[in-house]
Structure formats: structure tokens, C-alpha cells
Image: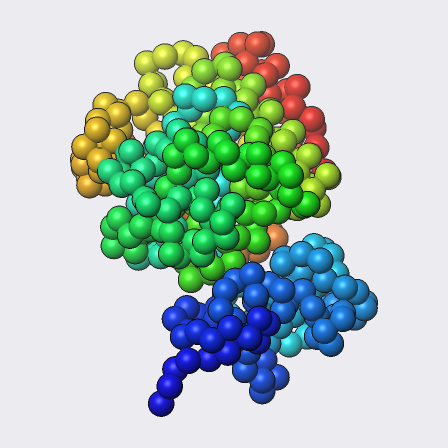
Length: 391
């Protein structure tokens, strides 16, 4: 029996090989030769000219890929992000299964805080725990590939600019861990993004093929570029590595402001999953003061610190994660604790147990409290100047 099918949109003959290329909805089977054809068909709506919101029943014409959700029971359409964010069980016809991967951006405006080390360690740790993980390098320096000793023929540039399926561009580097690498060509993607309509949502559209993963971890560059805007609009969680010094606390304030802007101007709610103190040395007073301040201001969002450990610096030279290079080191122990917190955060938490700082960024509160004993006024000021509420 021939496996050749005809694309529903462009009538091209092809052999389906990927999951997204075959879609069954309301007893009708559709075939798509490429993701752009699938997206084009989704944006036509239910009738070919429009759709009705699955949450509020408002008639509208879909414009963005996020307005369509494909489930085992068919397609769902959403007129706004608010409707999409509603509990799946509250949406008529919603699937009770997973709604795609957990998307985590590792981000801080300040360089030298351990972003790449954190991103690689979290991704490797999640894979070690049995999760299917895609690690995406959103930094043109390409340090993720260097750290793991891989160089992809196709990179994030090909996904963003040429529309390559992320599953075809990703490189399997470890059991259950794939990497989508980057290099200096990614800088040229900025020019491409600048000329695109809805330029902050291109990555979100291009990453539709990543739904087979449990987690997507994005290593962001230390800047507020169009690439990082795309990463933040695609992500649903942010992890902020903070080295134990004064300037990094100022960076946290800038991150919160950026996430507020993403919500207010780009209409994408994103949660701070955790703030990770890195390069912690208990012998230094400044490090202890930074920890006390972060714990006071962020409560449960402040993860246990990652201690200064030479093995963390040596691992990239060996092209290995910390768990492969020195599995019994303090660095491996600390990042395993971080991974455990990330996995635990995917489980539902009752409202009674949820502390105020764990609310989404749109409602996160940096509470006013008595300064920690021994914390210098300058360190307190770095966090106290953070807006008391990010809406």
C-alpha cells in the first residue's frame, strides 16, 4: 500500500514522516508536507474564513499560531491569550493530556552569572531524570555547543530564518537530550526578525515541532535583543542565575522590569520559576548578604545556592556536563538540587501552600520586609528599588 499522500494545502505529493504531517479532526484526516502548510491551514479557521473561540465562543479570524491548539480531540481556537490560559478542563472539548513541553528560558541581563552552565546543567539533569529535553542556544556565541562538544550543520538560524523543523536541526548529544546549536550566523537572524511582522513571535511559531519534548531549555544571551524577546515570548518560565555580587542584584531588577514589559506590551504572561544564586562562597560576607536579601525578597523562588566549584569550570573543557565530568562534586550536587526543584514545580501546588512570590510575574510581589541582619544598605537598595509589584 502506497504511503504517498497529497498535502491538504498545496497539493504536493509527499511521504509523511513526522507527527505533525498527519492530523485527524472531526473524522477528517489532513496531510501537510511542511509546517508552513499546517500553520496556513490552522489560520484558515474552522470554516476556512474564520473560527469561534473555544473558551468564550467569540467569532474571530485567527492571525497567530498561538491562537490554535491541536489536541487528540481536534483543534481549539482562542481569541486572546487570556482564553488560552484558562484551565484545559474548563474549555469545551479540551484534551486532558499534556499541552506541549515546559519551556524555560535561562536569562539575566548581566553577563558572567553562569547562564550557560546553568542551562546545560538543568537540561542534562532533566535528561538524567528521564525527561525528554531540547536545549536551545539563543546566544550567537554558541557556548552551549562548545560546552558539549557539538557543532550542528543546521542551527537556530535555519529554524528562525529558513523555517527548518527544530527536530530536524536538533542534534542528539546524550540519551533523551537534544541540542539546537547556534553560531555567529544567528546575529544575521536579528536583521531578518527586524523586518518581520509580529517579529517577537517568530520563534514561537517556528518551534511548533518541539511538542514531542517534555522540556525545552533556552540559554539566552546577556542582552535585550530581538532574539531574547522571541525567547521570552516563547517561554512560559524564566530561571534567573544571580552571581553573588552587587551588580548581579541590579541585573535581577532589570530582568523583572523586562518580564513586566513582555506582559504589558507583548501580551505574554511569563512566570519566574526561580532565582539561582551562583558562585556562592560562604567565606565571603557579600555572598552571604546577597543570599539573605534574595531569600527575603523572593521567598520560595530563591533556589538553594550553587557553590563555587572548580569542576564546573573544567567540565566544558572536557565537553561534558557536570554530571558526567564529576558526578560526586559539589557542583553536581547543587545542580541536582536545582533540577529537583524544577521537576517539583511542574506538579500542582494548592493555593494554601503557594507563597506570594510564586505567582506569575504579572502579579509577583517583592514584599516590603525588615532588612536582613548584616545586609548593607547598598545591597538592600539594589532590590528595594525593584517595582513593588509587576503587573
